Amino acid sequence: MARGPAHEGVPQPVPASPEVMTAEAAAGAAAGGVRGRFGSVALVIGGIVSLQFGSSVAVLLFPRAGALGVVTLRLVVASLVLLIACRPRLRGHTRGDWATVLAFGVALVGMNSLFYQAIDRIPLGAAVTLEFLGPLILSVATSRRLLSLVWAALALGGVVLLGREGFDGLNVAGAAFALSAGALWAAYILLSARTGQRFPQADGLALAMTVAAVLSLPLGIAGAGSALLNPVTIGLGAAVALMSSVLPYTLELLALRKLPASGFAVMMSLEPAAAATAGFLVLDQALGWAEIVAIGLVVIASVGAVRSASRG
Image (tube, rainbow, N blue to C red; front, side):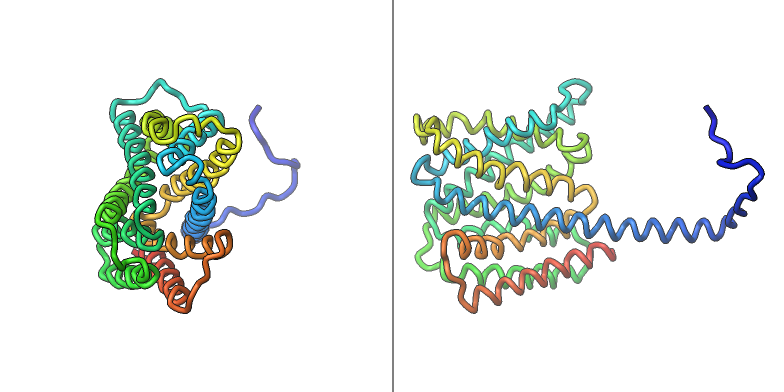
């Protein structure tokens, strides 16, 4: 049924002129863009906090299942949760869609496996510092604004300062694992954005996480064996999966739909700062003045990068 006036005979308001309507529409669009940008920033920060506190729980799980076992638990539980929650369609996707999902899954399992291998050999601060070089290089490469170099340099200075105590006598294999994880972290940022564009909601993430879980199963079984079936281990692994995979990856995928890759990449400089805070609160790892200054530097760099990207 067609909609008519609410009350017959009541004078109707005079419509605004096209110029006024255009100005109002532009103002509304600008306000919506600002809200969307800050909403995306909030999603990224929420994902970072969840990820790092989940990593603190993972440290407690290492003696039970080992590095590869923890990765497998994370990915398997996360894939099951996302498949149940999203129930993604398997039909109607192009070959390019499936290629993106497959590449995203490979990046997920590789990034997580290599990073856990790194922190099994070198201190966490050094590993996060080296891993961050991946998204840092990405932020410079994808941004065309000269100011992005300033924010990237500031973030790098803070990250290096945060991990300065971990570089003495660095294990070569551990450093190589961390750098490789950083390269896959940069690939993850790009593939997450592409997956979010090709699939509705978090459907693409659910499918990619399933690919990653399947690829990690042989490694986890070989590394942990029957320990993966222990009820306590499964429970802790489920908590790690929710905090370190499901929630942060979903939030980041949604954020990347509106936030430029360059700004997102430098915002990842908050990861070492969040890790230091989580270590202090959960693992009782004290923070010195150098660490506090480093956290301030990366926060300033992240805020500046987002503002520069939005103005560009």
